[in-house]
Image (tube, helix red, strand yellow):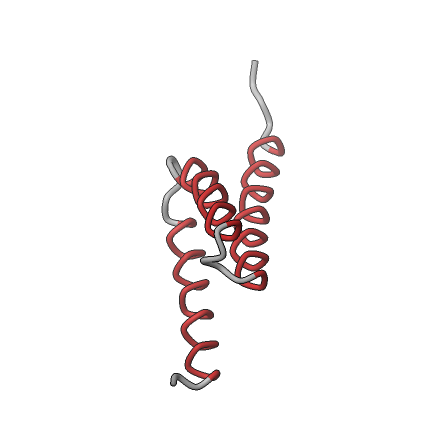
Amino acid sequence: MISSSYSLSFKLLSLIGLIGLIWVMPYWGTGYLLGWGLGITIMSKSGMVGIMDFIIYLIVPIIILGIRLWKKFDEPTYL
């Protein structure tokens, strides 16, 4: 069996990779995030992802989407 520290390390590295991937995709990253949320929801409903993973992998993209929306609407508009 794999020890819990390896499992935790893998999850943290996966999360860091997800955040890094999202930040370097300025144009299609939002669509990717929406698809990610749908996919993680489906996997959670089918039992492929535990509740803790579901929470982590859904909360992080929601936060990033919120930051993107805030930056978009915080920019001054020139008419």
